[in-house]
Length: 266
Image (cartoon, rainbow, N blue to C red; front, side):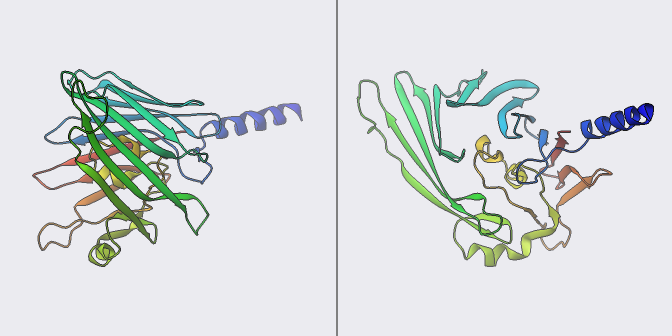
């Protein structure tokens, strides 16, 4: 019997080592995402997790070069810049709430010698009725600056922008509730995001890296349809592997080709 037990043990060990890893919400854990656009640089996002399958680090590469690290510790979040493009922030301050969600971000940047610009983001959450997870409900952005010699953040005050976040059947949209009437037919219910990364945000990537992660829970379950002129063809195309994992998203117009490649953690 011993040889049989040994064989079963190794078979189970081998199976578990290649089993797909899920987080506490049953979502597939992404290890790497590459975002390539036809006329611009390529972004690579690498994700690391702690022993409880919670996101602990995101590293961002531009054109193969390490650009920025986001490292979550017991003290908060450390942001390390490796930027040589002359617009790297002087420092970041990131605060979490008691549930592990980002509640506030301060970004400081020197826009001329001795003059500092400060961007402040605040995030507000609510409980989802289904499964009771947190989700982003509203965020604000305030931009101020301080000239050389000034002690207070007066300088140029651009003001505060408040944005409401709305969900309908697992689809996220910022703005106003009536936006759903306009975009309802563009929700792609045939393709589901079952990963722990906000892939819809990546499809419309604007460089605000935090919104891709589970640190700001604003993940959309579904993707978005987009059509060209009067065509009925969805400009987004999706590829899956043999296990049903979404591995590639392509945006195919001639003027703006985008490709998202996804790798998973096992």
